[in-house]
Length: 70
Image 1: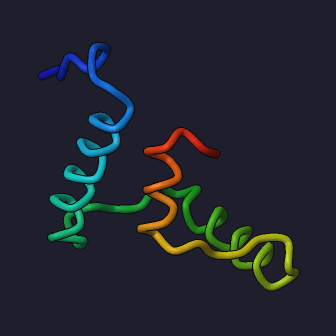
Image 2 (image 1 turned 60 degrees about the vertical axis):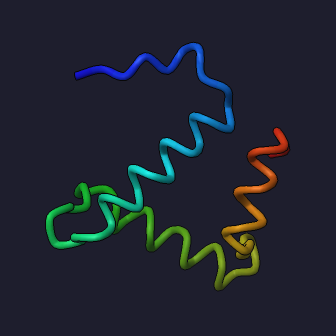
Image 3 (image 1 turned 135 degrees about the horizontal axis):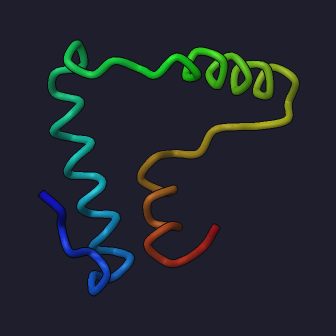
């Protein structure tokens, strides 16, 4: 089943992604991470440890995305 998304606004698309993630995360054991995910997590941890990356509050990040900011 495909969902027609081309006519949706950016905000509507993000809301769909958020809803899908909420539903998927209810049963985390049902979702297996792909093999590359462990490597990506290690890279992110190293970037944080080295001061090359940081964290942003999730609610603030969503608001920035909704406003069209990067």
